[in-house]
Length: 231
Image 1 (cartoon, rainbow, N blue to C red):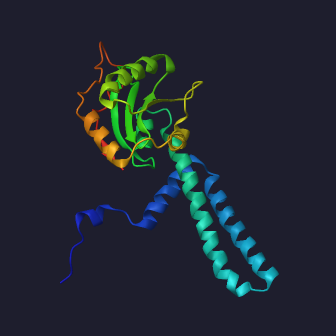
Image 2: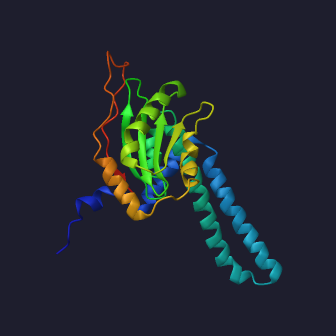
């Protein structure tokens, strides 16, 4: 008796389908991206085969060339796909939060711990570096938000380092596509046990989201309340 596939199996696209979907998005975002991927793979294939010819071991190097070309092509594809993703979400409310939730390093991310009616917001990420407050919006408006949030959590954070990062295109801000790299450069100040204890203290704090006063900007939505996610 055949078994019916589960709902999760039906909804989850296969690996090849996922690659095709990403390739379509990448092609729309940058028409030159896929030719670059193929050129990188083909170039690797040719170079490895030439090495095999030069040392007289062509048959041994042919399968090696295919594997190397596939690996280089996939790495290039992944890097270009990530750039396209950053390009699509750049400037949209919540873009920094999306990067934080997918950043390497085991960060616990709480979105929109503070914000205002202009959709400027501050996200909180907790990890081995300590607490990182990441803002989205113009410098003139997010500065006070960051200062107020840092003051609010300083007692619960105790002696833990608190970093603030402004995401944006203004001078002194970090572009959204360089946010993950910026986080990776931060020192590891805490152990995993200390991170867990810090998370418990911070999650116990009341919400500090600033509700809008007066009419909202046309077509704008307030960001959702904090939703902690751990990677």
